[in-house]
Length: 242
Image: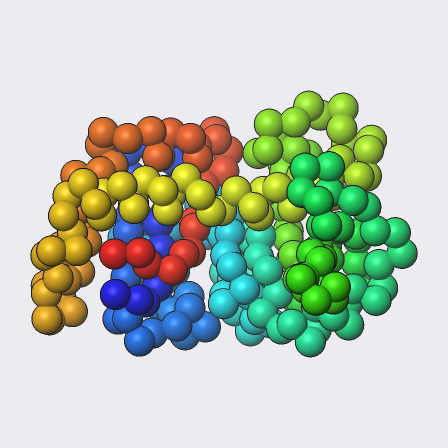
């Protein structure tokens, strides 16, 4: 099944978690706000908690309207811009491109165009990867996370604050970390619990199967603990795999 789902851990406790989903035909461009509102109700994310929560979301939730909605709600955001045309335009304002020290044919640079369209200050980073035809595929990251926080979140020393290139790649790495661990863990559940053999015709029934699978997974895993910091929560918006 397709659709969108969100996993949320607030900063207040490792024991509070929430996972929700929408129908398979619902794309993230339409799913973000309903999912976030549902998480707010379930986890009682008031204004004080929202300002300490990072929403890290792929491009489907990176439209100007969605980002500004999150910013108005008080969240910290770390997202990829939805518009590929906008990304190409912004990339032209990058003055220096830095080679990725770990991934060949990938570069990143600071976007210097002033971000006047957002309701709160953001930093933007253009990332480009070489395609097989020799052209560049370009995306732009949008973030309100401070440089010191993003270094801490990626396990780097505070001394790197003096190195703009280290800070740049910390922002990129933090976005890259949205994938991998969660998907791999849930894929293991999908196979180990036989979830593909338990598909239901009604959406509500399939949603219950998904939640039962999560209930089986989360208490026995380190999934939550790896995302927790004393002063910051996490909201991860992903495509549903179940």
